[in-house]
Length: 114
Picture 1 (tube, one colour):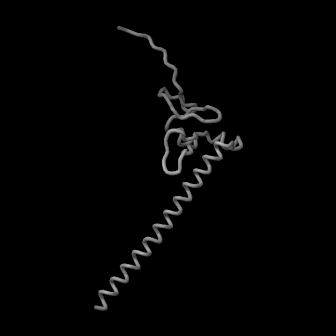
Picture 2 (cartoon, helix red, strand yellow):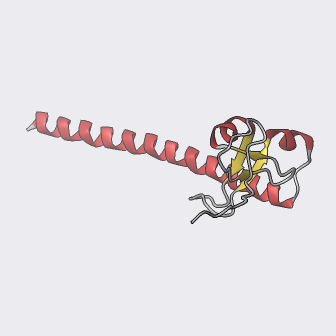
Picture 3 (cartoon, rainbow, N blue to C red):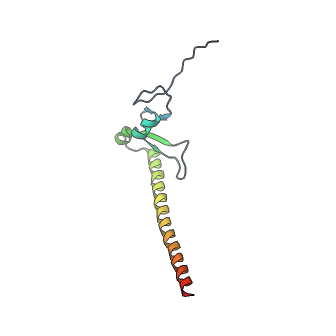
């Protein structure tokens, strides 16, 4: 049996690929394939510790052209918190290593004195 099917697909606005794409700018509605999303779009995670449904996607053109609305300001706050978390973790790792080295030095000194 043959069946004729008409499909409507969102295609990349940069390369016009035949593959369906799922990345859409939240402002202008441009679509991007996976490769062009990395180059022409910015994605903001919707949560501090994970990503997924609810992430905001904007083309870089719109980010420059349009002032941030309340939603984008909220995404930017999440982005700032993620950076703060990364910096805290780096500092924590540095201080942990220093403390561990101090313990190693003290244990080595104790062994030598016996």
